[in-house]
Image (cartoon, rainbow, N blue to C red; front, side):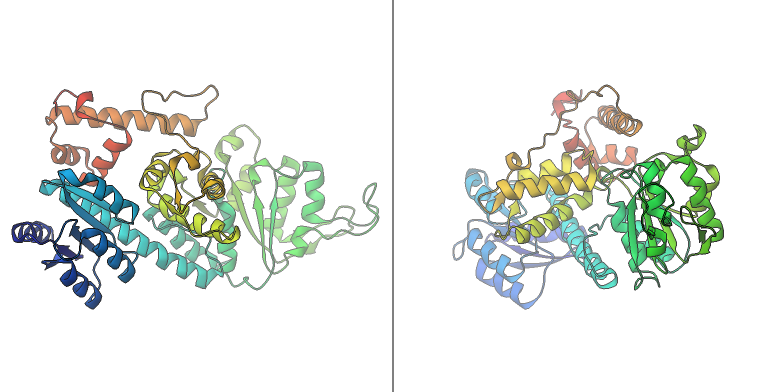
Length: 460
């Protein structure tokens, strides 16, 4: 049950709001003016506050400022008459979550309240997860409170305590190495070496030397013995990034390591035992690589005893804003700049963008914006990204299957929503029920796909 504070000097408005919110299962406290509302907020915590802008003692902007001092994370929705839009915009600049223009219907009120409470819940969950990860792993770079990311966290915690090989799958930029480090840091090997190596960044003729080492005189230029990464990782974990790019001949030698736990240096006379856990990652479709004889099937089964799929950023929209705020905080500290905030328009742009480069692209986007932003606000212009409208979207030549699939999903969802809206003559609740999604999700998708009454047959 969420606790909501309502501040309004009109008795009828207070009563209507209290009854409407209580009927949705919320616990509601009311105050007839700003001073009384602030006294309540100081005595007990609230999940959300709705306050009128124009009140006789303290106006809504003063109430907003004081509420932000009491609890800077609590969302505040301001209510205003039609002629006070400029004041509502000013309230948004000062940190209000959103505003409602009077008169408003209960459906609009409930949707906005639900979205504000969900944002509050996600922010709290994300903070708890980051604190937990910072405590358990010694760093807090993994940010994510969406259900998909929580499932990834649960899988990592389950597999970390064993010596099972782990295969991390995900698109480029999704943060696979962070999760590999998490597996190591949560394991009994945490005090032993963690050794990462990018199999795609080293020419295959040199990669064998890097992995297994070489004896003096093994080849021209080998004037001393070289210790390979597997020996360096003794007792710990080796992370083989972009394993799908490894040469077939090296795959056979890696298979031997996994089967026998032995390695042999180039030019060496005998193999020797190593105690190393292998965590691998790839952005390639290994099943397709196996079918085309580019990856060994027996190695795949050895590596993928415990596969973990990292979802792309576009599939976990709830994590975009927390990630952006994390990167803003990070880069502001690094650049010794005052902490900056995203404008509401910038937040909307981030949430609507497709993020083909995933978390890495978001990080680079925020770094650039922090450099460009001269005030305390980051605007869409400083983000330098653009969301195409559905009419403008067409697949570029050479698009991959993931891009084709994302485009097909978007097109199908948009068509289905318009079709069902027409069937139910614009009744959004009936539409959401038929599509088997909740009302808020439908509302968000209509906004994302820019579905308006003019694009359907049911009218306004």
